[in-house]
Amino acid sequence: MAIFGKTAIASNNKQSTIIGMGAIFKGNLTLNSMIYVDGTIEGDVVSTDSVVVGKNGILKGDVKAKKIVINGEIRGNVIADSIEILAGATLIGDMEVYELSCEPSGRFIGHCKYIEQELSSSYQTIEPDKE
View: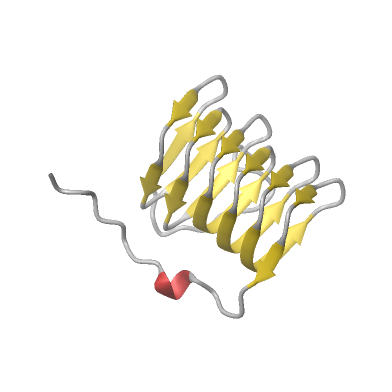
């Protein structure tokens, strides 16, 4: 299995951010790129691309992204066009999603609201704060 899980993630943006195993990030993240989490994030994550939580990854906070792939654990509410919960993964929180996939032994504890159209059209490039 590749570092980014079973699912191929297509992206026009070649950049990605990696929070490696053993790393702990405390704070909110806003990205224009994909993020792969195999460590721990304590804070909210917003990405115009994909958020991938690896087998060792733990994300404690809300997540909004085009696509979310969970192979580890998310404890927080999530909003995405597409959410994949892989075998052995856990999502504890509410979700708003257009397309959902949950493999056998993937766990979801919370409420699910299906949205009628993809959010992708509302995504725009996130501009950094200018101070």
